[in-house]
Image (tube, rainbow, N blue to C red):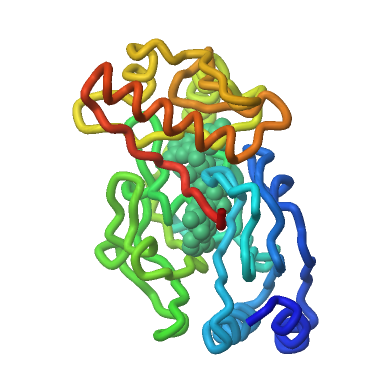
Length: 304
Ligand SMILES: Cc1cc2nc3c(=O)[nH]c(=O)nc-3n(C[C@H](O)[C@H](O)[C@H](O)COP(=O)(O)OP(=O)(O)OC[C@H]3O[C@@H](n4cnc5c(N)ncnc54)[C@H](O)[C@@H]3O)c2cc1C
């Protein structure tokens, strides 16, 4: 169906939720890269989300969910179909004893900060990860030897066929930068985290130390999507890239960060094409020099 034919009826069907036509997605990603979405819709209730996704499926309109856009590379041609964002009603955080429940749209840093305020330990590692809780569970985000898997006890998930259901830890199948949601196209609505009692000052001191390490080692002053490649078994992507002599390598306005070779940074005005060409060059050169084939960790979204 041509977009002229579906956008009006879709808006009528999901109104009055907030939407934008042909919205450049660069401003919704930490890379500051990405062409336009045919339609960007922010939903604020479970019912609206169900209506929107059901409509898209019925009319075969492609859709995808965007969190805080910190682990994606959106292609220059943008995204055909509907890009869905979860609105503020999916940001709520509640704490009961050692149990913290938070909406998928809540920034991970805010979830970690809330845990610290209640003297709950377990999320110190996540306080410097810039994504949402939903993206964090979907990717099983991790740092400094810890990962979401260590604290996630269960989650409420939306699937087109099953509606809103609860999954336990096993059902989420969290593994290295993976979860069952990546196969099932499930949308994480809320996560239930099980933390442990700790001392607020000690928790904050650890968060401060880890974030200091980040600032020292990572190029946080430039737009990026974090580590571009997954860690291959028995090696570190950044080290392999350095070994291949690619630190500082530039294609267009995209550069392998001279500060941390695992990051590609946008020097200002980089296109997705620049980043993709650089990724390919890194893969080829690293494989030639070290024998390791690096696989992207970031999600590459959109058409040609
Ligand atoms: C400077 C910097 C540092 C970083 N450091 C780390 C780090 O230390 N460790 C780490 O693991 N990552 C790191 N990242 C990457 C990123 O922050 C994480 O992967 C984060 O969890 C992604 O969340 P997001 O909301 O931005 O997801 P997005 O980038 O918006 O989306 C990523 C994927 O998750 C899906 N998704 C998002 N929300 C949902 C949802 N509610 N339900 C279903 N699917 C969803 C999207 O469809 C997409 O496929 C870093 C990134 C940057 C820019």
